[in-house]
Length: 182
Image 1 (cartoon, rainbow, N blue to C red):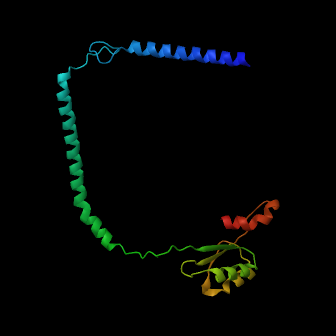
Image 2: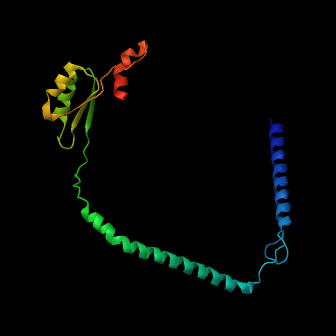
Image 3: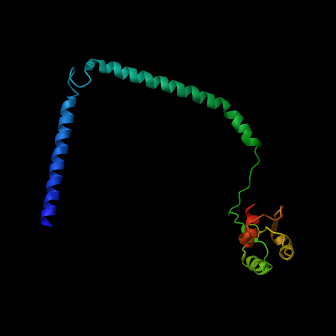
């Protein structure tokens, strides 16, 4: 165990030394960047008195960019009256103080939907904030009659296309789900 651990430490140390040696050789090969005339690129750097010219060039570039942005701002301000007119024509929407959370009940062929709807109507705090929507996705007449008996208390959605869907015989019991997914 100690021998294996010692060889692992030794290999790690050798790897560390080799990495550092390669790094030093690489950095020395590049040469110092502060001295002019030396380095791997062979390009003579500009003297330091050109620094003022570089600063002036950058300042001119900034000034040019500011002028472009000023022109864009003027164009935006020219189009502002059009936006204000469009906002005046738009009807104001009254936002309710509380969000409306509808309750969706999916009923295909459940005559026992009456118990579910009775409980929902009993525990619903507000008709406006919690409308009940019943989606009947198959043409079961008894279920439709139960849903219709509630009148305006709930919204009844019916599937417009009630034609049969061709399914495999082992999926026949899931035909209602296929109709819902249409």
